Length: 400
Ligand SMILES: *Cc1c(COP(=O)(O)O)cnc(C)c1O
Image (cartoon, rainbow, N blue to C red; front, side, top):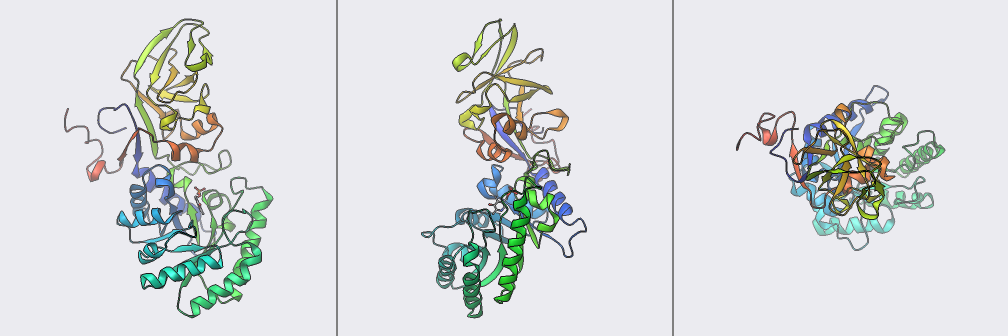
């Protein structure tokens, strides 16, 4: 890993990996099965899944992302503030949100209901522009989106508003519930329901620019669900949307969390480690102190279960993960205070990954990368170009 001398603990994001993953996913979804090119939306909500919203947005565009996707209007405005001028869709607003600014900023907004169509029209009047609106239909997730019983009225109203020049309907879309389980019957049912919605919309006179269904898992595992556009979040960051079910696509996890080993000590058989002595040394061993805890996003539920990588060796976490620190068993690994610890990273050379931490904590990789942070610094590197456009491997030469 390139970079300055190790600091206490930090997140390092490789933007070259982000670009690689976005390009790779575009290739995968355009593998020849689709009659027309499938466009790519890179989802950068939640601070780019913890990778940094502006850096992720820039990397995705460089890799050809046609769209960026975010949840909230604040996130959409942050994309604009970062200088992005391309198509952006946001999809989670509430009645008290004022959409004027996002509509003025040329962001496509999503309507789930007649009230939200009106909200968008009102914002367009305020902004002096014709808002671009996508309609989200609920095909079986029972989360956001218009329920089936409301589709006909919603499409009719949208078509009327469009004919009056008060908005443009740019998309119709839905979201799958079980895409990470390709054999789940809900996938077929949702896709069939979505096709019903599209037929109804067409009958109402709507001709949206994009029709979309797929998150990462569906984009990769369900070619029939790709439609005009796929919305890839987690896979863009190099993480597996359906662990154990996804073929190897050559995606590269972009985030590494690393720390400097704070201390090393020897234990005797019977020595208990950390709060509650939930691990007791069965024999003499050497342990190391890692200055990262649950306040920094190392889940406490991974106590006694997760592994870190030190000198290329996997070392188990021993005992309870504390707020600020955790203890690992070094065994025979010849580590010293000051050595580099990788909590998780790309997994190259057998190192630990965010997916390993998710499995240890009983959660999904999404939660690991979006929650890591706390007091950790975050640094972006570019293993193709080097930091800030310099060739790789030069950023630590300034102060030898
Ligand atoms: C978060 C989100 C996505 C991305 O999902 P991944 O599983 O991370 O690919 C796509 N669409 C919507 C509506 C989302 O909320």
